Structures are given as structure tokens and as C-alpha cells.
Length: 285
Image 1: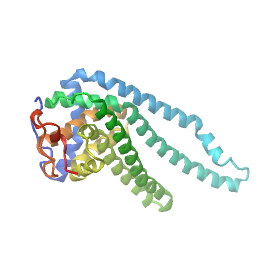
Image 2: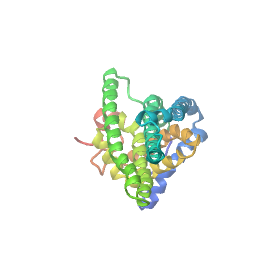
Image 3: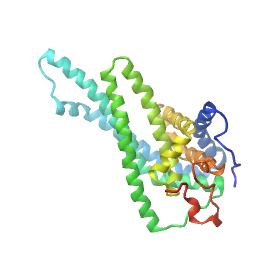
Image 4: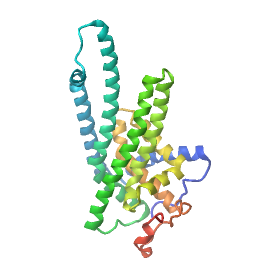
């Protein structure tokens, strides 16, 4: 095993928060400083992210006006036009929010196989864990399970973020602040889920088991997700961070696993070859 066992759960909440944020940088360091051979696995997800982002941006630029006019054509009366402009701004913000969600949903679906391979290879290099033998049945089961989990995750995200967004127009001053900070916090949690999920899915965890892990390690996971959410606010650089986050999320998850971080949750420690498949199960259902 190349990577020494270290327990990221040590220290207080703020220490764990900043340590979790550091795993995004660890992803960069692991690829560029220690395993540049992983760069070829990062290239295709990066191209996919750029294409999807460009497609969403171009579509928004060229078709936004048509969307508004389809909903309500610009009126001739200047009094009614004031209301129309307010609606124009509201729809613009709503479309931007939906485009933001659509970008991450589409890029996650298209780049998931490549990020999963990158995560798998990271786990093999850092911890000496060989990937499981190929099984068509397990693969098909995993695809179906992942689809269900992704739809459930998207539903939960929209159920939280849409009401937060509507606060912008319901409560002046306070509403936008709640949306800004609340939206950032929610995004951080879901980003942590996304980029730790490669490891959790390979262990065949249930949807509830995944969220229980994030909840029990909130400071670490929110720190990791916050660093990524902040990086994604920076044009181009944020897109470069997405494959690195797959590496960083793998390192974070496996560091917790190697240090027995899931034992307290009713899970066994890291599995060995002699443990057999049952040792892969983190919780008893």
C-alpha cells in the first residue's frame, strides 16, 4: 500500500472541515506529482465537461429570448411591460438555475464511467486494492441501482434548492442571502456525495447507507464539497477540478475506510482478499 494510513476524522470540527477541503488539492497532487499516468484518464471527462458546459451556455444565449416570448410575448403597453421585464428577470434566474442543474446532471451521466475508472485506478495505486473481477450481472445491477439513486438524489436536490431560490422573491434582502449561503451549503453536500459515490457504489451500498456516511462525517464531507463548489465558481478552472475531485473524493473515502472510520457506524474495517465479498458490505440492512 503506497499511501500511509491516516485518520482524517482526528481533531475538532473546524480542523476536519479544512482537512476535508484539502482533499481537492490532494487530488491534484496525487495526479500531477505522483501519478501523471492518470492524466490520460482525466482528459476525456474534461473534454466531456467542456462540451456539455459549452452546449448549455450556447443554448442559453441563443434561445433564452425565445423561451420568454413563448411564455409571454413582449406587450406593447409600457405599464404591462414593466411586469414583463420583472418576469424576464425571474425567468432568466430560473433558467440559469435549471441550466446549472442540467449541466451537472448531464456531465455526471456522461463522464461517470470515466471518473469511476479514474477512482478505481486511484484506489488501486494508493491502497493496493485490486478492482473486483468483471461480472455482467453485477454491472447491470449496479447500473440500475445507480439510476435509481441518481433520480432520488436529483429529486431531493430540487426539493431543497427550488424553495430556497423562490425566497429571493418572497423575502427581500434576507431571501437572497438565505439562497446564497443555503444553496452553497446544499451544493457542497451533494458534490461530496457525487465524488465519494464512486467508492460507495463499488461497495454496493444502499442509498440510505451513503447518506448516513455523509451525515456522520459532516465536517469532512462539507469541507470537501465546499472546496469543490468554490472552485466551480472559477471559469475553466472549475471544470478542470471535476476529474481531480473524483481522485480527491476517493482518497477521502478510502482514508476513512482504512482508518476504521465506518466501524463506528456498524461497518467492518477495510476488506482484505481473505475476507471475501461480505466484508465489502459497510452496514447491515
